[in-house]
Image (cartoon, rainbow, N blue to C red; front, side, top):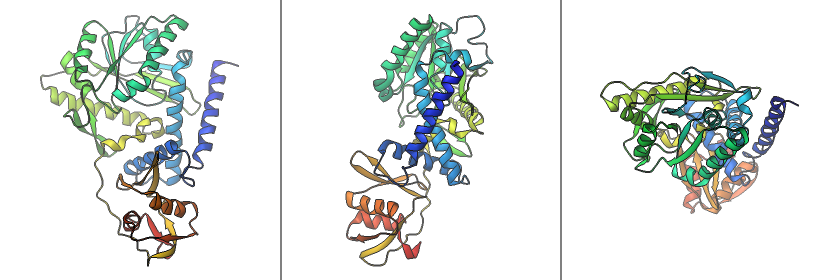
Length: 386
């Protein structure tokens, strides 16, 4: 069996297992807490950006997003993928016969997004990877160990270091690395920017699929400061699981207005992401967390009424609302408003019963403020009002 056949079989097995796990998410919110939460947050984000997308189509995209995420982790040690991946090096960075150093690589959580490092290590690049503090603590050592393993297993001469992207000195670290000829690798669509946090002034508004989000401009800021071009890199996976990796033309810093360059470049980088995934939105892992950077909707549905206190046959609006579980804490997600309501166990059980057994009659204690909140926002309605 060739590498291609083995890889395709493995990918199909991952996809099938994931889809089996997803089957019970909506109907059984007690199970698969992490998968349940990821599914519904992703669904809320897709509704926001693609309001005309059918529920069935959203479910297919969510399955694809979670599949890509799992494969990206598994591919981190699949060094032979460099032999079968279609490489498009529009800038001549790793195929030009010269050291792949002194660049700022801007990449995205698309396709097998860790596969980039295999090409950089093979090209002999000294790389500095910027990671959010939480990711650095959990996965940073794994990145370093895999880079060393790749060097031993394949004889690749490149090296990898990691930097906390949220460290206030990270820009200085980046400048020093560029000066000695190293290359920086930064995920522009991740959870943390260069030398900043969400509350800092490094966020700029960008257009993305007809909406506006607040995006991190640290990559462009560093590019202008160091006078080093930004090289966008996109990894994608086709329907047959074959990978492609594209090094796009560099964005060269110009002019003296650093803030304008940062805003324009950040918009260009997100424009490239939108173009890359327009026909296959499930390629982007960002649908799992982009809600953190959205403008919240003010839409409020008129409250649905339940008659009187006591037993009632209830219906849960599972298209708009979902029960998320964070440990022992239940949270109601309103997908239309991208807002959450903390629930107590009693209110959570009432909503859960309405989801799992919609024909059952549930006893309502309307003195419970959380239960009343479920009714007031329209998450619950009596069967006669549905």
